[in-house]
Length: 313
Image (cartoon, rainbow, N blue to C red; front, side, top):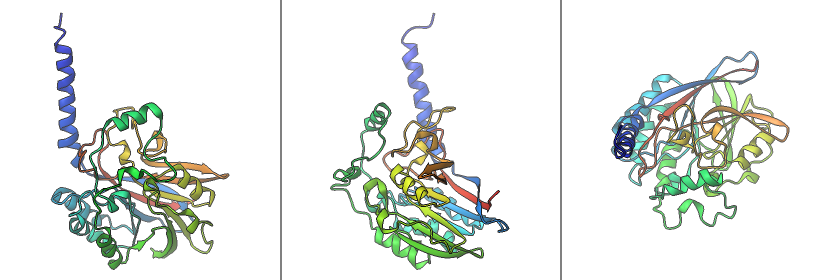
């Protein structure tokens, strides 16, 4: 008969192995996921959209920088950056260097809370509480305790913005933008980060203009109030990030939390959203980084996504 003390020792050993894998290998196991979205007008050739999200750059992350630079080899028609580029006030030069080759392509961007504020150490019990209550992330409507940002370090997001703007990427912070992409007239509607209540949908409400070939909605955190608004306004595609795909997932089960009020079944990848009698495609990127204080991933490798937009069936 196995001694009783061997059971907790075995559990501890298994946990140590999983942690070593999550922190030492998977968190740097970068990959590209490919999906197809049938939303283009009939007869239009496919276009390739590269979505990068949740880079959470810390100065000195050379492997991540080189991988991001290599994504230019995919030759996308458009790059969409859905925010949380930073996890270090000193990370702006490294971020711009990593994204430099991608900024040779047309692009649009929004920011997330970690672009504005440096990360803080957080009690892991808050995620366990989310499992019990079913409430994930920030839900107080007045924003009075916005994700613990009171007293937080301010990141030099203006420098990041200036770098993106200088490259010709379109800033979609609570506004609209337009680009010619592979011969298509594309319009975009973006919001600032709902996770810290910076979204102002009333400033962009009304839906697509009707005179573009394709309209796309872009936001960092996929809160339901935002998804409902975009879908009711008939945007065919919504792109978001923020969730890290759950970050610490259970093999063969999936994510436990989403860090917002989106259901865990849609924590990453392509799905659909319905509101106001309409349906939109929703793509949530699992992102390629982590908060600097929780540098682990398990059963949820870091990623960028190449979305091939094809003609409607």
